[in-house]
Structures are given as C-alpha cells and as structure tokens.
Image (cartoon, rainbow, N blue to C red; front, top):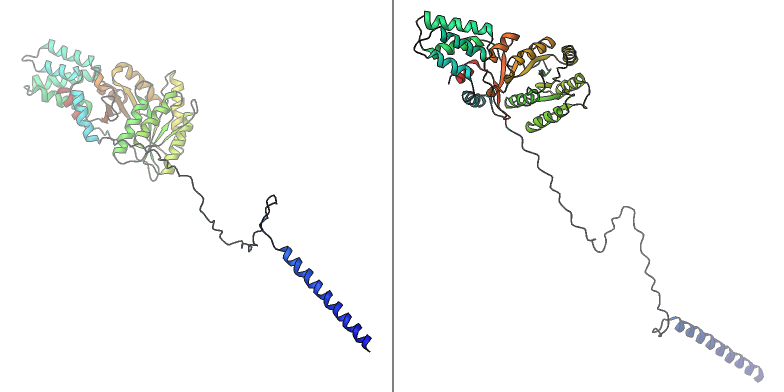
Length: 389
C-alpha cells in the first residue's frame, strides 16, 4: 500500500515537471518572436503598410498635395483691322468740283474767254469751234452748240455770256437724263452690275470705288473677280473689298470668267446681298473674242439673276481712242452707263458730250483723282460750273 502511494506521488511529480517544461518552452518561443533593437550589420526590418480599403469606382481621389501647375501663357489675338468709312456722295461732289475747277479744263476757260470779248467776229467764232473740237466735243455737237450761241448772243441781243454758255453746255450734256445706278434686283434677287472696259482704264479700281459708294449708302455688296486673265486683278479687288468689309469671290488665274461671275452672283443671292459687282476681263485682242467672252458672262450670270446695269469704264485722257473702244464694247454688251476716269488729268472735257452722243447712254460716274473716294455721281450742272469757275 505504501509502495503504491509512493508510485502515484512519483508519477504526479514527473507530470508536474513535464508540464512546467512545456510552459517554459512556449513562453521562451514567444519572447524570441518580438523584434529587438537592431544590431549593427543586420538588414533593416521591412515595414509592411497597413491594408487600405478599396477605392470605389466613382469615389473622387483627392491627393494629399495639389500638383504644381505651369503658368498659363495668355496669347492676345490681333485686333481686327479697322474698316474704312467711305465718304457720302455729297462731300465727294464738293471736292470733285474743286479739283475739276483747278484742272486743265481748256474747254470752259477757253470758251468763256472768247465769248467775253467786247466784239465777237467771225474769227472769234472760228476760235470757238476750234476750242470745242480740240476738247473732243465732236463735229456734230460743236456745230449745234455754236449755232445756239450765235443765236442767243448775236441775234437775241446778247446777255451774260457766262450764263448763256452755262445753259447751253448743260443742255448739250443733258440735264434731264436719268443718271442713277440700277443696283437693285427684282424680288429677293441681288442687283447685278457688270463693269467692262479695256485694261489700263482703271476698271478694277473703279469696281472697288463703286463698292465704297454703295457701302456709304448702307448697301450690302459682293464683288466678283471675273477678270481672271490678269494676275493682279483678283488681288487688287480683294484689297479694295477688305478695306470696307466686302467679300470677294475669285477663281484661279486663267479660269473661266463666266463661272467666277456666276459663283459671285450665287454667293450674293445666298447671303442676301443688295448688289453684286462683277469685274470682267478687258482684253481687246480682237472684237469677236471680246464679244463672245462678255456675251457668255452675261448669259451665264442671268441664269441666276438679271443684269441690272452694265457700266463701261473709259479713260478720259484717251480722247478719240476712247470712242473707238466704246464702240467695240457697245457691240459686245448692252452698255447702260459710262464711267469716265482721270477727268482731272484731261484738257478734253468734251469727251463727256462725245461719248454720250456716240453710244446714246449717259455718263453716270466720273473720277477726278487717285484717292479711294475720288469717284462720284455725274451731275451736268456741277460739272459745267466747275469748268467755268
């Protein structure tokens, strides 16, 4: 019995020792897993970042610090060029009269000097005829004017020679002729103005100046550069259009003038423009070629809108040569009005009378200088007063 008790106690003691040994090993293992202070030469411990919650697709991610943005350079767009403000017709007429009065107008001054003599004999009348013919008034018009002056100054008892001369010159030029420009179309169609004339007469420049007159009247305008055979014509016309904000329809050099003219009228109709001005080719290599070309331009244009005006540009300094040109163009197209350029540089103001009689159409515009607004409506009374001033 005692031996049995001693065996049990021994087993219990051994069991306690085993339990204590196991507990000690576990505690020692846990202590060894704790990081201790780094030992020189050991590799640094790697820090594992804490797990982050997944970002929702629609969530806005805000950075800890906004990135530095480069300064935005402000580019200033160039200001649109200021458009010209064309002069109204009233101020043009005043300035043109002054220029004409100071020009070499042998017609008015010569006649007035002869008619102001105390005694007007046959030699004086011959001198009057010579003065009129030299000024390109023409033989028939000269004969008519001299006969009327003779009757009023000699037969009817004379009177104020200057006043008589003024009245007869105004009557000879035609005071009651309609000289207005037909620049309005029928219905919603634009008015179409064809401008014809030989190169060198100032045709393209005249188109640009007419555009300025219409802009001054608050009309909307489209220009057609249908003189495609002269390289500088389209560029020149574009420059005129840009100055007053008027669009220009142009084609390639050497392209079909009729096609360019049609596209200009079509553009004018689409834009609701009041007037389309078409600059045509001015070659005179032969009359048949000119007639065919201008006739085609007119036919093609009138498929879109009716031509309301055909203006013939003549250089006043060419005298009788200008009349020859006028005849050729009158046969090619139905000219409805005449524009006389460079009238201030001519001593032959009688061309106004001669060209009207030759073509049976009125002078509607005159140019007396190189300035942009040196083109104005022709008024016989103002013209004669300038000649006699």
